[in-house]
Length: 321
Image (cartoon, rainbow, N blue to C red; front, side, top):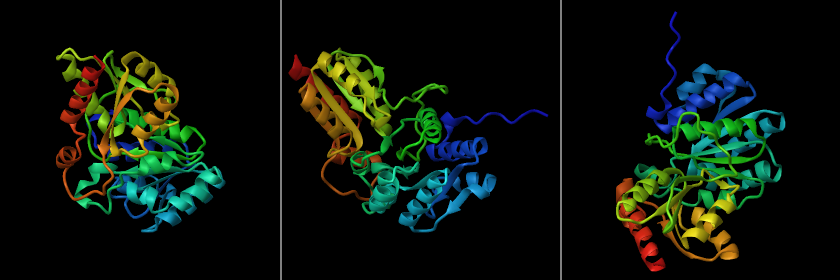
């Protein structure tokens, strides 16, 4: 009998990659659990995890704070719970429960926020969360990750299941183009240098990394050298790679699918202001709430789409020269 073909994760929506990988993790280790707050169909754990591993699937209903409490209890008993919901509900709605029951107690709970930033477009401002990276990285004991493609997502999930600490994962639900090979490794202590250049440093994470890389490749044809640093981990943060690049280029652009206040741009500015001040341009959502709109419209409105990334790099490279 011919065994079934291995899944082509690079051709899947990220939510399907998450569900298939979580199912794989449960098959390898029955201590792994999948918890939902009535959004299992949205992130594909229903039916992928719920039918394959019903004993390890818990739907807590529309009560995210209670889901965090259940997860904390499971973690206290040696289990490895993954809790998923839209970013607004996985972070803002139950921030106090995460603070006390997960981070303060240092419980091994994995929190997954789906549809971050402008990718939540159809559901509008109430569901759009532009501050989850900021508030979660400000929490003691919390690790904060934002992978950029399917293969990196799988590497991050395997790392999360194998390590013992409170962790927040920002999960794109959409299908995204592959950036990394299938066997990509994940080290939260190291950024990835995706493009070399000496004129400006471009720092990105998660959903925005592919746009940053496209901008760097386009600018190379104009004679502008852009070094792209991708940060799959916002906390811990690889300080040394940033400083080494900033010392070489003397100018930094950050871009994130988040508010420019407190997230990736905030982390970069904190480090540079203390250790090596240079010109910095932060791209992302300004100090505003979201609205019902597609990503292209929001890129244009808030000025952090592909053409804005390229122009910011041009501006800083020219000012340096």
